Amino acid sequence: MRPILSIAGTTVGEAIRRRVLLIILLVGILFLAIAPGLSILSARQERAVLIGLTLGVIQLTSVVIAIVLTVYMIPNEIERRTIYTILCKPVQRWQFLVGKYLGAVAALALMMAMMTVVLIVVYAIQQQVYSPDQLAPLAKAPVMFFVQMSLLAAVAIFFSTFVTPLVNFFLSGGLYLIGSAFSSFFESISQSANVQPFAKGIATFANMILPNFAYYNVQNPLINPQQAIQNETVYYIQVTVYGLFYIGILLVGGILIFDRREV
Amino acid sequence: MGAAIETKNLTKSYKSKQGGRINVVDHLNLYVEEGEIFGFLGPNGAGKTTTIKMLLGIIYPTEGEGYVFGKELGDMEVHRIISYLPEKPYYYEHMTGLEILRFYGSLFGIKDDDLFKSLLEKVNLAGDMTKTINQYSKGMQQRIGLAQSLLNDPKLLFLDEPTGGLDPIAHIEIRDLILQFRAEGKTCFISSHELSDVERICDRVAIINKGRIAKQGPLDDLLKGGRIEITATDITEAFSKTIQDKDAIVSFSHGRLIVDLPDDHNPNALLDAVRSSGGTIVSVIPRRKRLEDLFLETVSGHDGSSVEIPNPNDAKEGAEA
Ligand SMILES: Nc1ncnc2c1ncn2[C@@H]1O[C@H](COP(=O)(O)OP(=O)(O)O)[C@@H](O)[C@H]1O
Ligand SMILES: [Mg+2]
Image (cartoon, rainbow over all chains, first blue to last red; front, side):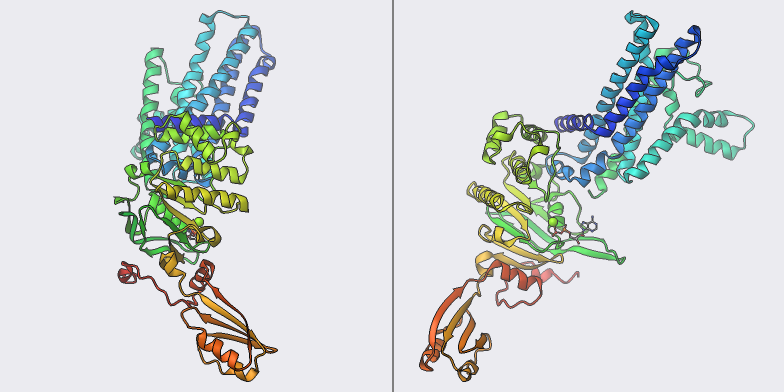
């Protein structure tokens, strides 16, 4: 456990100093801060629009950070040979990979927490609402985004064990788009009666194996129409467990590949 | 004393640019005794780093096997008692010297700031331990690398080109540290293509070229077969032609004669002949063979040396080639 935590800690330290990531984060925060000035709608609509807009900014920023952070992580370690000084110590490869992953997730948590704080502050000032009871629920969506980004980071770490950063960028990004936008589409096909069995089979298969990023877009009923959430807490727990399960599978797969590859 | 390292036909092949596969390390049979400083010498691209990585279990052999302290390559128990200083290493730039040692120490479960500070002192970085690595010079980075390689008080150190790209003073500092390791009873496996570094400190060396061991043995034995250079003046050209020894290298011009003899030839007969022909002996200089010469003649394939240290495993070599 000790090596995993040290590797994770070092990874966080490095991540929060990477200039590209800081710039992306700053741009995100800047958009959050100016969001209220952009809303030109009536006062009644303003609240919903403001929330939708700022959450969208957080999500988009987080996706970019998650991908940029993780696709280079393993290749950089190999290129700079830092990995050699680690793997020649009593550290197993799976410990290294898990440490790197946890570090990425922790760095993401840190950056997303910062953005969430900015969002809450902006909302409080704009809406003149200062009671914690009213502000706290604003963090719910970012928490779900965090689970989503953790899943995305696991996808990218998995690919980074065998493809180059550039290929990984498109693979992970593509999978994120497909998993966010089309998984409900696959689901509806697989459940619809008047579709050919073959297409239905493919849709069911795609729906089963693709990571369903749409589960976490709880604030966006447009993207996820038939997701009628009855019990919020149960739903959150379910999709989090789904995420953890999927992350586990990706990490095990990544470890199996990484264990065999040359570094 | 037992073997610290032993390999049997250790081989690594990669895809070559022309297609097909090439043995970058080719049926290597190494034997490193515990407690010795072993020089692993060869030109760039000879396969030194590849061999070390296999011995550490970072990459996997295509063929053959190896043992470090009797255990299979990559054994985690072995990783507790060895260490590695990679070629041109890089350390996390945002960390200070002390943080680097804390990080690598934690990989062994070591949490001992006193130890870390004493190691920093040992490599002369005590004054710079709060500077971040990106403020370190190359030599300082190499020294922090050495400090991290000493964290677990290793029994065996792999040093890959430890003086590569360093200035002469840093060379000497590193060399002194390596000598200190030997005094502490540690085994050192040093790869290098710069012979001046290892010449004075290695007990035994292996010369590797194109993945194969060209020579392996105690340095003293390999360096046998030096030359003696005899210079004389007032010599006639006729006399210079009378020198029969076919191992001698004779040069003559304007009455000046230089004869280069293998050092196991007795020079007395020649000296007597020079004197009785009316010549004057200017100098007789014994030249011990330098590692440089041995290296060059081995690597270039013109092996003028009469010494071949048989490797107990050599007989097996070639069978699989
Ligand atoms: N991953 C690899 N893929 C293909 N060829 C490699 C790889 N690693 C090393 N080589 C080749 O193996 C040879 C030996 O390399 P190396 O062991 O680094 O030599 P040395 O350390 O003696 O300079 C070189 O020709 C190098 O190009
Ligand atoms: Mg090398």
